[in-house]
Image (cartoon, rainbow, N blue to C red):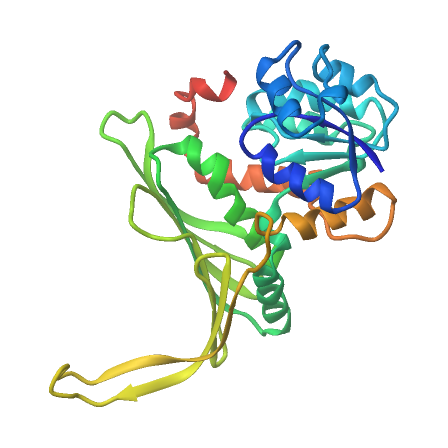
Length: 321
């Protein structure tokens, strides 16, 4: 299978490794016109003869089986719209765009069903196990924590969207009941968001917070079990409590959740990437597969913006740069 690759940023190393493992051959690679970074990247991976001096426009002019677009969201819209005109299957790294109007215009393109969005967390074995648990459950409560190591809204839109998309994959759509937003002192950014959501089976408490010492996690409480993705790469299931009596060393009685089983995401590639590209290979061949559609990606971005105060959002000039 011959594919064209657009991009050369740090994440491209992970993409290229998974592409190579899944019987796809890079037959054209480029980003901006005459990009030295992309030229060096192509040379490093022994793809120099496939480097396109004319940039992404030249990549899209090639007669290939599919295109893979992995560039910054601020520049993705123009490239994706041109790629859609080819009528070929397209893989796009999330979140596609920070702007709802752009992603909706992509959704409305006549070839939008050809899009495969790279929300790789749904391809984790841990996520698959949690989805199986949620589907078999009668419902309950969910707590999702979205900390960011760097400050500000932009990081929620770039990284926190992964957790939102994963939640939607696990339990389907849900609606906002109530939210609390704390702004920074100068009201130019968001300090934290706490929100309550629900659907017909689940009540969901969502916490978004910058610069706190915590992992991303999703905790599902249902019946006699608690299942966790903490971090998302580790699945743990608990049932019942162990009682540990006081001792001379620790003179307090302890109650500790009883671990039924647990496992960690394994593999030589970036988590989820191997299974994701196995499914993209099937997608290109028009076979049944697991994939995030453009409709789901739009729903995720709509959800993210629903959490954000619209007046505050007007200050974010970086979104359009």
